[in-house]
Length: 250
Image (cartoon, rainbow, N blue to C red):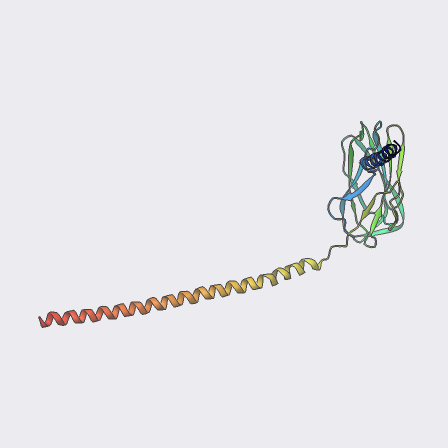
């Protein structure tokens, strides 16, 4: 009886652990506000980014999103795309040091964009993208941090403002971070063109060799046919002479 009781206890423990593991796996990953480029966000260039906002509540909708733009690397051009059901407010601030963009001094830049729902907003079980065209991206940075505030219909505010640190675990409320790619290399197209030219050279040489081979083959064939024609002609002439002599003798 004791052995049976021990086995039963072991089975119960294993079952409990397995159940806990299943629950742990089944719990969805904690979603948060993120930013991603539509294409490549290259240093010194322009791009369109999407601020993706999922709704993490079962009984409230997201009705407001505030995105703070970096002041350490201000952007001279910020243009949100209109979205049905949302009002957009752009906040600009004076810069301590004016930006030089295409030879022109820019004394103020966008420091915040606010989207406010004039309808249901982002309902439970859905997400919304907020596209923004931005530039000129800095040439001396690897990333841009956009601290964001997400407001729900029940007045709860989630502050996505913690900056992720390299080599450390992701914080509970990470700020959206845009990773910047290397600037486009102007020499790349020329290099690609040269490579294409180099790659084409053997093909051209092979084509020339093939053409020459065809020409040689055709020339040889023509010579053979010419010789055959001469032989046939001589044979015909000889036959004609022979036939003429027979008629004369007869």
